[in-house]
Amino acid sequence: MRIILLFSILLAMASCKSSGTSQTTEEPIATGPEFCADSAYIYCKKQCDFGPRTMNTDAHDRCRDWIAKEFQRHGCTVELQQADLKAYDGTMLRSTNIIARHTSSDSTATERPRILLCAHYDSRPWADNDPNPENHHTPVIGANDGASGIAVMLEVARLLNTADSANVDVDFVCFDAEDYGTPQWYKGEPQVDDSWALGAQHWAKEYAKNPSGNISFGILLDMVGGEGAKFHQEGMSLQFAQQLVQKVWSAASTAGYGTHFPSSAGGYVTDDHVPVNEVAAIPCIDIIPYYPDCKASSFGPTWHTVNDTMDHISKETLKAVGQTVIQVIYGE
Image (cartoon, rainbow, N blue to C red):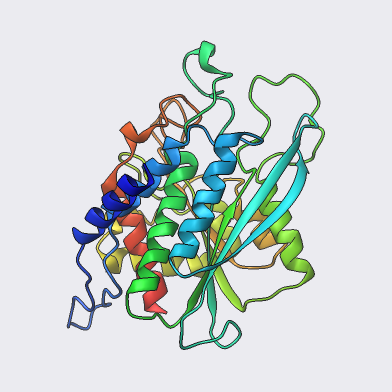
């Protein structure tokens, strides 16, 4: 199975050409290698093939180990930040944040600025927003809500390892225990103040104790592969780091994906970027979809439902987000 996957990834990579400067006018110039949506799609599918990556399960742990090995394969140094974290109902979650650092061969970690890219890799244990109440206790595959963000980061890591060096290095952080927040059907009293983004809260507290790595800013990727997704400017991101929002949305336009990144404001989202801003004191924004006309959820029709599967992952959306991230990195 592993050999077949590697062959598939190599085929996907071969279908994507590398590109450098694509304009010669006075307009902003697109730069950096071409993001391969086929490769990112395979990375997304591979995570889903493990099954729901819910906390304290074998599927979660096997996927964790696979993600860590993939970052290592792409030249990153990897640290596993483990912690037992208390869930809303007192359940202790065996959490592991995966920290992967890419450093250019002609630099040291302290000499060059670094960018933080982050996403969560656990999936929702319950489809508590599913239109069918019978599914409300069914684990979610999490193709979009979880796997898509990790997939984009893995492809970015691959490109950084194979293409020309950027002027910045990148810390990739895969947050755990993001999606174990209090379910809609729970009737008890939550035992923690904020039951969401537990892994990010832990990472931010540890980082604040010993800030390191010269991180300039961060970008959170959450649900970045959905069909028809548009990424409006998330409210908390505008509150914390408005200039960074403008930088990233400008990069999307320069890369040719401005239609996927409307300049209008979206909703306010409590997500992993909040503790990164408030506790770690790193300016960080959230690239997250906003569906203003979706009755099921402003996060889209598959959010926290059994339909969050590969059937609803769009290579076009992965490409738009991935190329925007590449533009940000190589535009620094």
